Image 1: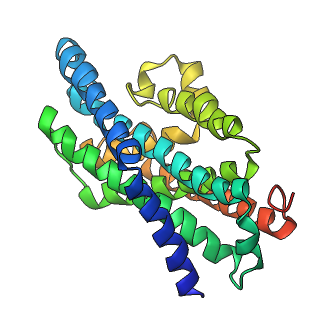
Image 2 (image 1 turned 135 degrees about the vertical axis):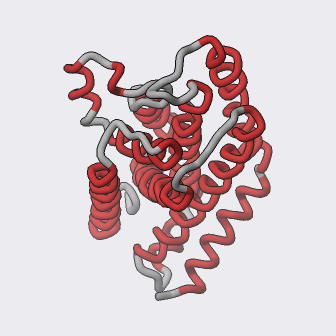
Length: 253
């Protein structure tokens, strides 16, 4: 394992994050705080509890997941797209490092950024909402798995994208709707039976359900199934990335 190469990629990506701190950090945190104020405090105070949980507290896990997923995809996709855009990706391909080391460097940096943002948003939530975390270790585990799986997805998107428009296409048209339809602001048990079945094909449901269980001890899907679904999704992303580097798809063209 070439740890020096991993460190070089990781350090470069993290330095880019701190150079654009206003856009990379303050923007998602402030926008999520507005969600807390509008949905949690203003609207939540006029709504009934969901499964015995105050609505303002109920939406916190979903809002954190929304920010973490979008930031993971954005950070990882931009991280690998820029070397493609300016041509330095060929330096990576010709260097004595494996695809796994490249992935660890870029995805590890994207995970770190998203985890940092997620924890700051969680801390901010305590300022607006009375919140209690029943299983903090499980909460951190689901947060890490979310950062990992969606950073891998973002890495794939960054390789696939041929322009900046395509780079934003999947997060805007696919990921955001999946998050909103995945139970961010409601329990899927509130949906009609047929839509409950359809929703189970949405991988985001399992992430939000498991993350919410860590807070309140309640979940729409069994925790074992959630972990299996997240693990399977992560494995699929790893296999796709391995195939991309093996064939050179969208990298050498």
